[in-house]
Image (cartoon, rainbow, N blue to C red; front, side, top):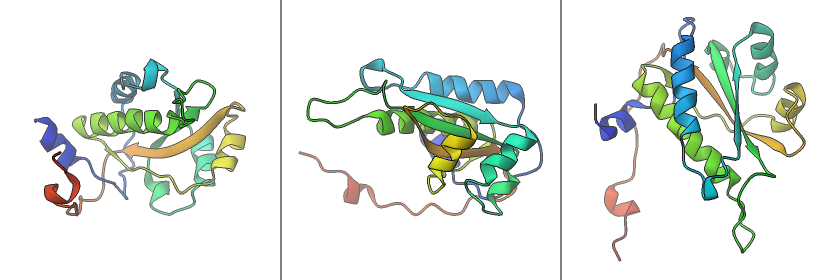
Amino acid sequence: MNFLELTKKRYSCRTYQAREVEEEKMAYVTECARMAPSAVNRQPWRLRIVSGDEAKDSLRTCYDREWFRTAPAYIIASVLHDEQWVRADGKQHGDIDVAIAVEHLCLAAAEQGLATCWVCNFDAAMCKQLFGLDENEEAAVLIPIGYAADAPKEKMRKSRNEIVRII
């Protein structure tokens, strides 16, 4: 499949099969995230794979939604603030960099027949405490990952003319 087809295949999955994700596929998607570009190549992110029952139960307290509980595994993507590049005007690029890495991961998952969803509405402070994140580290996004048990809904997207400006 070409890249455009892959971007159309990726969607925010809200129900997962109980089937476990193969270790090789998890290694592949995290390797794709590792290869993501970042400002000044700082790579200010860390990925934690959450697959043990006790760890999954802990993570589910940070975002307590029924659909979230259906995922067989999760990835916590965090920003390492002391490693991020900061532009001269003070703009910090850690959130941008981790977003690029996570989207690499999500697209690689779709390529592998896996489903994901970006979850940003969670208790980051609780996540930091439960998973022992370093002082300079902030959980940015939770990614449930597994085999979809739902079907993608039609993606509503703005037209190209609404988002592209030719100067």
